[in-house]
Length: 155
Image (tube, rainbow, N blue to C red; front, side):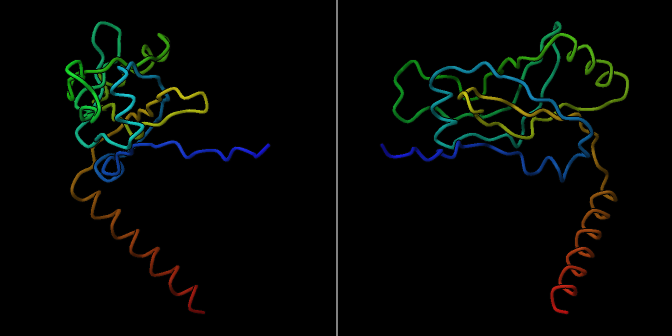
């Protein structure tokens, strides 16, 4: 019998999150999705660029996560921009909530992926917004590191 090669699971990443925010703490949580949403994400469609999470009545909700309608769906396809419930333990939500209200941090989704069991997971990060100067400093350090690596490689 032939061995099955593990199939690469699709994942969506928020690449601009690391540029716009300083990521402080990360949490892995489940997400409640409809069937056609799961099929669209497995097809590699979706955008986390404008997504953020909020806490409403002790529950965390993901907003602004655009999942386009499934191509082969029917009239019961999902709303592309609906809010989606995130699944976290109550103690984790209680740990996050004061940081959002008192310290002015933001919950930003960094990655959406499927785990080994085939369940959709979202990696949330507590983030602090960067200023224009912070972004410039990051670019300078990245360029300096690139130059040092280039010099070491050429020697």
